[in-house]
Length: 118
Image 1 (cartoon, one colour):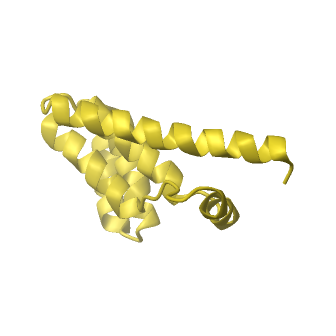
Image 2: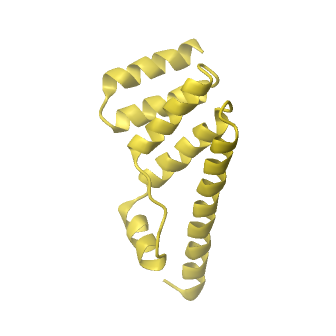
C-alpha cells in the first residue's frame, strides 16, 4: 500500500463516517421522511457487504472504521416503510435483498411481491 493509496483510503473511510452521521441526523430531524432511513439502510448494506480484506485494511488504518450489519440495514428499510408505507419500490427491493442475505426467504418473497405491486 503506497502512501497515496493509504491517504485515499483514509479519506474514503472518513467520508463514509460523515455520510452516516449526516443521514442519522436527517432521519432524526424529520421523523415523517422515509428517505433518510432508506439511504441509511443502503449505507449499512454496503458496509456490511464490504469484502473482509477491505474491512481488515480499514481497521488497520482507522481507529474506528465504519461498521454495520445486514440486520441494521433491514431495520432501517423497515423503519422507512413504517414512516411511509409503499413510498418506494426500491426500499421494498432493498428490504427483500436484506432478508435474502439473512436467510429469510419467505419474508424476502413477501417484500418482493410488495415491490412488484407498488
